[in-house]
Image (cartoon, rainbow, N blue to C red; front, side, top):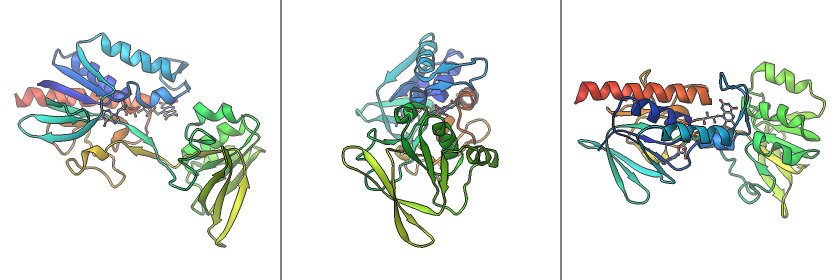
Length: 303
Ligand code: FAD
């Protein structure tokens, strides 16, 4: 069996695996896509001590660093079940069962979908989730951002510099974003904010040509002509596969203590899949290190 088995190969998982391997213990990592969300990021300017890097480059460095150590790397594999017996068993979608004394879950998160007609149909044909990746494709065009939280308003500010016009659609009567972001948005000439708006449908023929929404106060349906819709309504943790085995928040985030320990002894978690605040690369890496050291401590005390 492994001493430490890491599930997920983003910044949190890579960091956890390296910290574990540096203790000279048997370490494995299962990753559907090594690098995780970092692969989808264009420029990164807040990874301290690196002034500027790009997602795919950082993702490659994570893997290169992990390969420096004696770590079993299992790529393009998904975990589908975790069970605590004498050892902890993790079943993969290919049927393999891996056994380990401790497990670190670092399966990250993904963008939340709106779930309205047209969204799935026009994904990558005008419907986008990542302004950093897809913003330039909409240069000179009209776009909407759905969601008035920090990520939505950040996206709108970003897109205002690239596109002709940005309309923010927010379901609630107020934006939830920090006031400094709202002020910045309001200072830009080519942005409009529509509050109390429930997106009903993303319309199009081959590509997006607009968005229909219900004006919640009047109940009236309105339509905007535009060429892109950026959905910014939050991140969903990739924790469905755990079912009821482990304590999670209402949002599905794994509850961890300050050692990265979960409700199952020997199972630790790190990064965007947990209830720790602020989902960032540097924070994920720090929590991966914490979880690995937490797992090592557990091994010392429970052998
Ligand atoms: P993730 O990066 O989500 O990695 C999860 C890993 O788990 C992946 O390897 C995935 O394939 C794997 N996985 C998932 N489910 C399973 C399963 N069932 N079995 C096996 N493997 C599984 N942060 C910054 O600090 N600066 C930025 O500039 C920045 N820009 C961003 C831009 C975009 C477009 C996005 C999407 C995010 C950005 N972030 C940024 C956030 C940052 O990318 C995340 O906080 C960070 O990647 C989280 O790391 P993680 O390891 O917890 O999870």
